[in-house]
Amino acid sequence: MNLVIAPADLTPDPFNPRCPTRLLLDRIADKWTVLLLTVIAREPVRFNALRREVGGISQKVLSQTLKSLERDGLVTRTAYPTVPVTVEYALTPLGISLAATLAPLALWAATHMGEIGAAQDHFDSRAGAH
Amino acid sequence: MNLVIAPADLTPDPFNPRCPTRLLLDRIADKWTVLLLTVIAREPVRFNALRREVGGISQKVLSQTLKSLERDGLVTRTAYPTVPVTVEYALTPLGISLAATLAPLALWAATHMGEIGAAQDHFDSRAGAH
DNA sequence: GCTATCTGGTTTCCATCAGAAACCTGTCAG
DNA sequence: CTGACAGGTTTCTGATGGAAACCAGATAGC
Image 1 (spheres, each protein chain N blue to C red):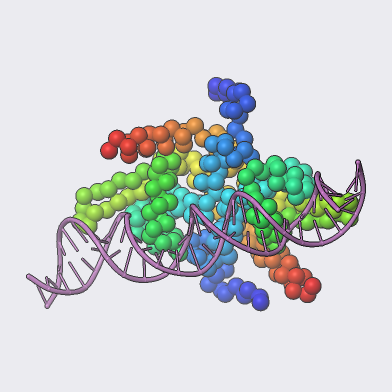
Image 2 (image 1 turned 60 degrees about the vertical axis):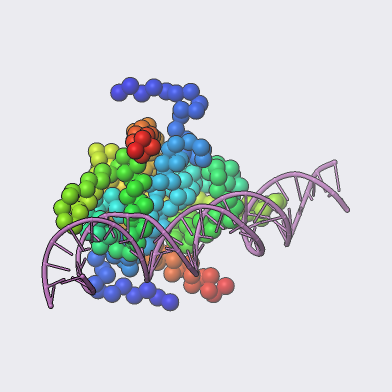
């Protein structure tokens, strides 16, 4: 691998608000991105199927989010001239690699949700008792 | 008020808006959570040091975010009666495990930021040329 | 011809939320 | 008594999210 160590500016620094990795982190650490990428990772999927599968997302936000995911080169949008028109969203290789990175997160949430709930109850009862 | 998990809800399903894992995912897939946990993971840190290290966060949002991280049992808040008062934030074991899960994300962002930027340029030039 | 339905959106409106800046509390230095 | 430092809270305002309505194109039913 040709790892080129760059001078100051080119060193990724997520803690610098102007660094591209920070902007990228803001993008992918988004409420819907994780869910959307997880669904599309399973198989290419149409707009309304996506909407039904990810409960609670509005059409506007789904449309906006897909548009920026497409812009970021994470998903592809393909329209087929069927009747009615069919639009299929699929992951790019880049999107696949991100989905793989994101997967442990969903697993962590499922594994530790009990502990979080207990911590919240504990915190709330102390705050209430105060 | 106690949240009683109904039988149907015992299977974690992040795609169900009412499932605890979904709520949890909404929480941890937050813009600041990733950065904050990453900094605190290195060593316990004071409020203003945290603010300086994570550029661009306002006091209000930092205070709010730390409060909910504390409620979730991810960080601890310890005030020392020094002059002026010192408040130190540290990770709990649960927070450490989440930080470990989140670390690959920051790495992914650093690794692939070039590809994302190229995809955006490509997309924008096509959209502009249209 | 008129209406309904399907898809994949866009538009409109409103409530919430994030950020900027000011302010507050307490103590010490000059 | 003015300023500085730490750790916040309050206030105001502009951006953002969700709900619901609307739109476009084509086909199916009556």
